[in-house]
Image 1 (cartoon, rainbow, N blue to C red):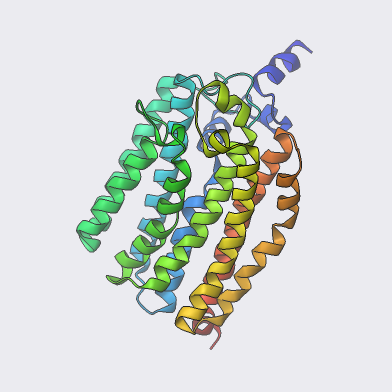
Image 2: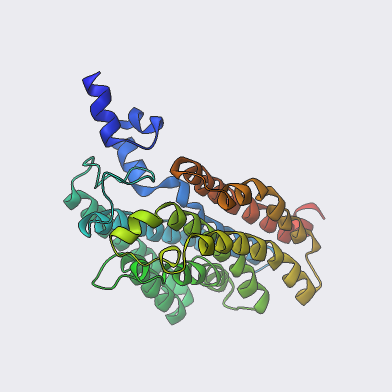
Length: 318
């Protein structure tokens, strides 16, 4: 009973967390936050699918893009875990998923070193990509890594100033999709840039529900997210607005290029998300919002698959 009591103090958010108590590997997996990694995987998938559909793909480069995006996302998550703990943002009163540094599961120095390793790996991969894509890829890589680091690091981190939403929209949207397409094709077009807005917007929705859940804790630590600056209702409307706008991107692209009509199937996410709209609009507690956050990550994957298959449909079946 004493062990269970102590475990509940360390892992107050989920019964599943109790299963990782004696597994270092599972603790590290929890630290990288696998449920959020769809934000990095999805834009690479879309950018590669568009390159395949346009006949300009390069498979080795696509794989490198995947690992570059993944390591940047993991580095950002680890940096967030470490610096939020150091700044006192993550406390024992946290209602979101367990953070390994705050919970004492991994020493801060180890999380810091893992952050450095992850960003170093992403930098090395970006150097390989730069041999193919040149200076534009170097610029994208440097800005992506710095933005991921300074999202929570430094005296005026992006996430604490309410700029996280813009960062997520840009770097997990058009930059990631267009960068993936460009380094394979050596060209860019408006359809690719527009396509990047959808994963960026859904990633903003993920951030919105995260900020809605943490709004009270963020107020205490002076973390001025948009939910703190403009209130809970703003975060709710931001979530719904972001999902609906993302679902309309395929329509906008089709009207622009008059081709790849199958991408319109991706608009169904606006209907799939109805249960999330209901949860967000009601006064639900932390666990319900945690579930919505995970659901939105899955929604991003669903959208990306539908859009990608729609874009390459004629190449696959005709």
